[in-house]
Every structure is written in C-alpha cells, then in structure tokens.
Length: 236
Length: 98
Image (cartoon, rainbow over all chains, first blue to last red; front, side, top):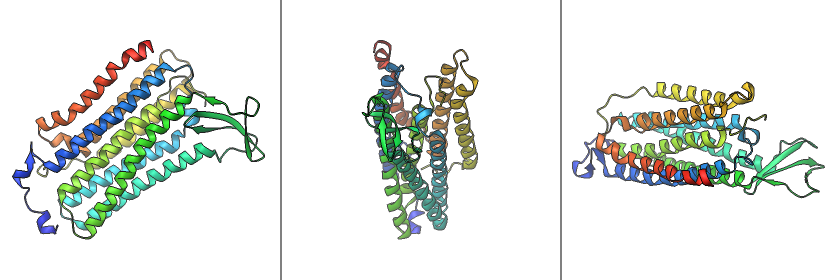
C-alpha cells in the first residue's frame, strides 16, 4: 500500500469496539495462545510443588546471568518495536525500517543465546577436565565429570538421571516460547520486506507489535518462575 | 485505532522494566547471601511473582496500548487471563493432595 493509502482514515465498517477486525483477531489469538502457555505454566507449578524434595535449585544449573541478559535484549526489542510503530504513525518510513530491523536483530539475538544455552546444556563444553559437571536433557540432569574427553557418571559409569521433571518442564516451556520468538522473527522479517517494497499500513504494524509484545510478556513470566524462583536455599 | 492518544513515554517504561529485572535477579540471589532467615523463600517468591506481574502489566498497558483502548474491549481481551487464573485455582487440589 502506498504512503497516501497508509494515511487514509480507517474504514468504519471494518471496525468493532474501536479496533480494526485484524487487531481484534490478533487479540483473540493472543488470548487463546496465552491460555496455552498458562496450561503449561500451571502444569509446571503443580509438578514442581509436588516434587519439591527432588527439585534442584535452578540457580545451580541454569545460567541466570546469561538469561537475565537475554531478558534485557527481549525488553529492548519490545521498545524498538513501539519505536517502529511510532515511525509508522508518523509515516516516517526510514524510522520504521530502522527500528523494525533492530527488533529483528533483538529477536535473532535472543534465539541465538537460547541455542547457545541449549548447546551448553547438551554438551557442557565449559566443563574443565576432571571437574564435576552436568548435562541437562529432557530426562533430567546427569551429573558426572569429564575424563579424557568423555563423560563419566557416578554409579559405576552409568548416568545418574535426577529429577526427570526438571529437564522436561524446562525444555517444554522455554522451547514453546522459543518457537514463538522464531515465528515472531519470521513475521517481522516479512513485514520488513513489505515495508521495503512499500506494502504496509499502520494497522498491520500495530498488529505485529501486539504479537511481539505478547512474546516479551510471556517471557517475563517464564523467566521468573523457571529461572528465578528458588524453592530451597541454594548454595550454587 | 488508538492514534489520538498522547504517546506514552516509552523510554520511561523501558527504564522501569530494566530496573525491575535487575531487582528480580537481586531478590532471586538474596537467599544465598542472607542464609536461612525465617520465611525467606516465601517472601522471595511473593516478591518475584509480584514484580513479574507488574512488568507484564506495564507491557500490556503501554506497549500493547491496552491503557488507551475502550473499556469493553479491555474487558473482552482480559477474560482469558481470568480463565487462566481459574485454571490455576482449580489445580490447587492437585498441589495440596498430590
């Protein structure tokens, strides 16, 4: 759509309750998506509270500082998204493009750090030779040590799966959110291409922003309950 | 669309969100340094969940412009949140008798 069309007043027949149908549709999707997340979060709470005695301290196994930085990146990308929408409202295509690109970069950086985190959990490449370390799998935490380049676990060389729920709930929650971030980056990318080709309007940028802020909002909740909440006094 | 409202100060919201994030990490680490104080786990959980809700509320109100929408619309889109709370409350027996 041309810039002139982008500036045209909204068509009253396409609105209900003061919002466009597209925006209403996105909100309905976000409502149902939020309930999907809430189902997983509620399951997490029930499983964790029922297994407090075997639940490890998240601070001991999860990288709080890296994830706090990741949260920071995601919050910043939310701010660049509202800046992009500001640009769209002002018909300032240069500003819109610049901030959309920054938002894409923020989302990609978040995903990259999540991949780094997962790789570290699967391989624990930072474990020094002979040092006690762990691997985090869906089946839980395997504690062992790295000897001559291969892993030796307690219990006569076999693995020691601990608290199997810890790994599976962690990966299901964070990966479900990661898929949302990935979809968001793809969505942002194609919207960015549309802006480059002059096919955009304010309402679409606003709807895109709603999705992106929702992903940020859900991460705030997941970061708190999965990473930060400790149910025992940790030493880690 | 919500074009007629005055733009909120996004940078201020950003700063508040960052300060809350730093506070959250500090609160999460507090039990390690303060040691076994009475009820410290409960206090940190309440503080952490409280701060997370404030952050989520700020994002919804300002970034998602809920503060500037019609009231009926806000009620409609907030309803799933009520259902989500109902879900957690209905699961409480599982926690109590699990």
